[in-house]
Image (cartoon, rainbow, N blue to C red; front, side, top):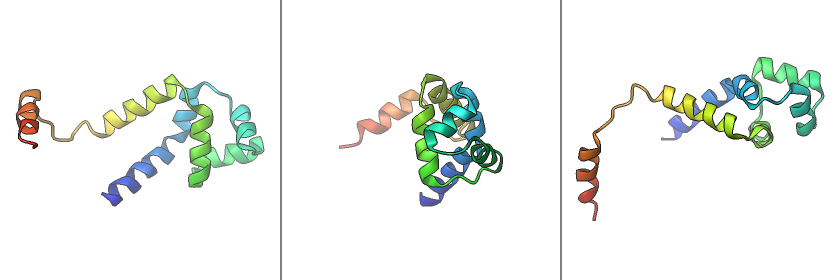
Length: 98
């Protein structure tokens, strides 16, 4: 479980440039909100060397419906090959949970 959390975090960090693009905000606006110089922000965006605190702050700044939709699509893409069950089988399974 913990390895999966780390892998998900790595995927999140890797798609930060796309998240920024989906947000519709300009790099200089986000950099200012994060208290960074635009050049430092640009370098971080290219290299992907964000700290966990920076990722958290960045996601708070760019939080909007477009970003939520983008992240949800990425989650769905990453799980497209996961095993699934039918709704009937799921209902039968949860009926036994008591």
